[in-house]
Image (cartoon, rainbow, N blue to C red; front, side, top):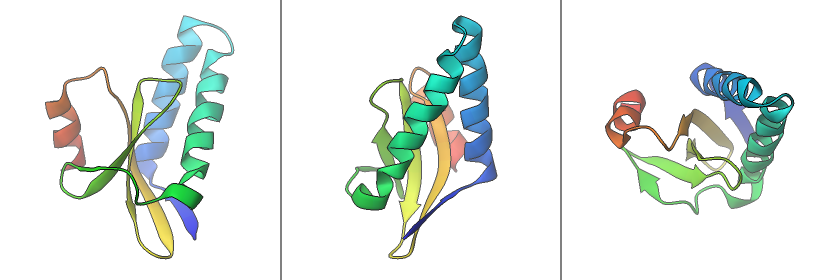
Length: 97
């Protein structure tokens, strides 16, 4: 199985890292490392997370208030978005539609 991070999700990761780096030096890098660790775990756990917003599985990150929205097939996990859970759920729903 392989993991594919779509461009929009990559931008979400970059935006999140920039935000946390502004909060404290080095925190942006820790954010990226933490989220990539979560994404890598999908090689084992893809498909077990609840489904939200039109067929996307949602995995909640452990260390940051972010959710990873993905779709899984037998051969690939596609990361569609990495969204801040502190935002309005209607915004996430619109972003994923």
